[in-house]
Image (tube, rainbow, N blue to C red; front, top):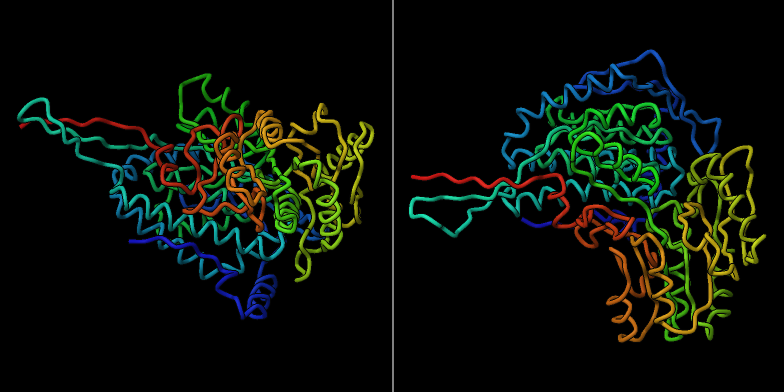
Length: 516
């Protein structure tokens, strides 16, 4: 019994051309423009009303047409999920482990086609898209490993009050969960929440983002093919504004990843009726500190990847950098030169690092934020412009310096490729300012001084922290390696995805005692 990460790119080291060919062949296999049903109890359901999804790469590409779920279909999905729960909750944890492993194997066989779908749906470059599929596979393997390691979370309580007494602590599921997933990791985040529910004996009704519904459809189809019983995992599509309340009124629990404001609103509406469990991750405003003892080449590489990977559209994206005054100008110069090298464009091309942002609304926010920064004293060190707005949703990666720390952009999650850089005098000042936000998801430091790193780790308020991470100063957490979740408004349960305690968020304890 062991767990190892998938890590496809490393497996293709020395065979890079083969990697590229596999991905490019997969792009040709993805079928575009089809109509997709919702999936309830393993059956394909059509509501008679659909919405069209287009690729942010090129808006002439129709990803597909998807059903607009209504009250009848949502009601049926939860009715079926609750009926399936009666039997599913009693299945052996060993059976659920085997189904998860079987799903992981099916996903491995279709890895590149799943990745190509992600690229077409949300504009990720091929490396990040394949990495996302790897992450989803890792979740299936890791949660199976954790469930097996803990023997289904059932244990004998060794203490006895009476001679003939036998007591056990057993973790048991809640029922049918609503899973509401975001656009930025349409396969991986949908997987961790959905699988977290069903591998622990719950059932789920999954609603993906309306920008990226195809990856979630593929996930549910593969899980059903692997043998998850009909009704255990279900899939509905449509506007969250139209069906979120319908889902909340019927769910026994809620798993959500998205913005703080939407998450808080959902939580309040969920508990108005009954106290029900909630698993949430609500974004971040992730800081990096660069001290005068940093290796500036490492810092530049880590910040550039952390800030501009997938256009800053990650909850963990680097969004604020606090740089010691003595090295500020040199760091900014190095960073600007690095950003100027970024290839922006169609992510289906091998050389492209940064594809489009997700939709027209994101472009409008980007323009608003750039204008706001300039009007209030910020300087555009690099970027700041929209590219080819008519064809797709492309913008320049942007670094802003000199914006006064009093400005709200230092504390608000932007979710576009805009990075703020400011000066500090001491590590204590940097950490204090890094913590002075509602969020606490990820954070990083660059320093070759172990005492500075230790101070940072001891005092930073974030769920995932890194020192001298060049592959992404605040990004790239791996299941089974860096459990991913936040403090303060960034998280909810304090049990991070891809970690040893995450599955407990979907379970409740029951003390069982019998007497001879």
